[in-house]
Every structure is written in structure tokens, then in C-alpha cells.
Length: 128
Image (cartoon, rainbow, N blue to C red; front, top):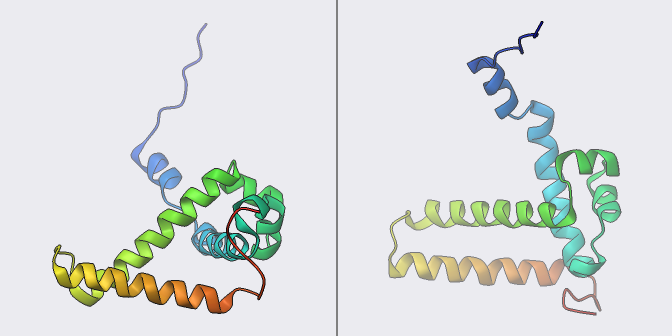
């Protein structure tokens, strides 16, 4: 006798696809920690343990959401790009134009200056 497997319903798929309220709070917290740790320690110095500590989550929790440091960094870059793009779109709209290019450039310079001023003296994000 062959047992039938449970069927997948639209509500089951929706429940899996939509992040929980906790996940919606934790992921930005984790991604901010990634940016902070990479800024301070560089890519090589940014370990899953350091990122978890900075995000105030366990390494188990971190690996629940992200299987590797590369996945974590990719998601942080995607989130930063989305945020960056959202700010520029709010300023000048989403049509490509000289004003949009200038807004991107100004935003990038501003973000770089803010990052440099936050960094502890003597630290570098370059190769060690």
C-alpha cells in the first residue's frame, strides 16, 4: 500500500514564503552587523561568530538564516543597494537621467564619508 503525500495548498506556500515578524526584525539587525563588522575587520576578519555577536544572536541563529559568510555578505550588499536605490529614487525618481547619476554619485560620496568617520582610527577594510 502506498501512502499519499500531503498536498501543497496556496496557504501553505504563502506561509513558507512570507517571513515572520521576528525574521523581519532580525534580518535587518543581522545585515547591519555584517556591514559594521566588515567595515571594522575587513572581509577576511569578518567571521560568522563576530557577526553573530554584533547582531546579538547566536551563531546557530545566524546559520539558520545564512548558510555561509558569502551568502550573508551577498544579502547585505543586496540590502544596501536596495536602500541606496530607494533613497535616490525618492530624490530624483527612477528614470535614468543626468540628475539620477549625480544623485547616485552624491549619495555614494556621502555614504563613504560617513563610513570613514565611523571607522576606528587605524582600521582598514583592505587586504591585510
